[in-house]
Length: 278
Image (cartoon, rainbow, N blue to C red):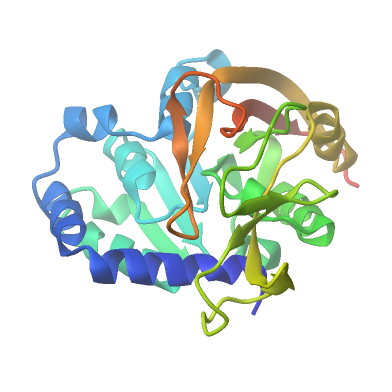
């Protein structure tokens, strides 16, 4: 098991401890309302909503969501007529997504799979792949290379990859219980040595686990181009910032909050698959 499998612990703890949240998620699915779901989309969902009207996306039918979580974006897209496959490394997240799916009228247009994107291998190619805050959870360069390789393999020619990820600003200062190493990997302090997290290390008498990769804008551009993807959209959103949580191994979605040195901003990118082979 690798460090990013720690997200399964987070989902298990979050939904075991918060019965009210569980109840809300299932009631939301049972009483599905398109407008409410659209209003509650996370920042990636809002990004998708804002660009789907563009001419390059008019013929899209099949969509893959990488890091789909408990399914909100997949539900919204399926309700608009798209065929959606959502994958997530968290077993618990996929269990919840599949349970919520049962009550939806458009459930035949959605499938969820528990799958590691670095091992992605399915007999299908997609018109659009959406990264729902997955890439910045891959802190190891080898894992990130596998991510791009697998994503490219599953894109149709001239199809598109959408990414929203956090980037590094020179004035970023990690908040309490986080440290940022020289490789721009963000580590989070765990409660104690008995925590069942993978890849934890001792630092100054405390245990830490790697949780996010911050990347400089130039390095992000080069990373995309290196894997034979054509960058067609690249926008900094300093108004969208990730609020780091100090009480759990997770990060909240980017929020429109005042710029803070302890809250990384995001960059949004759209890349297309080049026609020729690697």
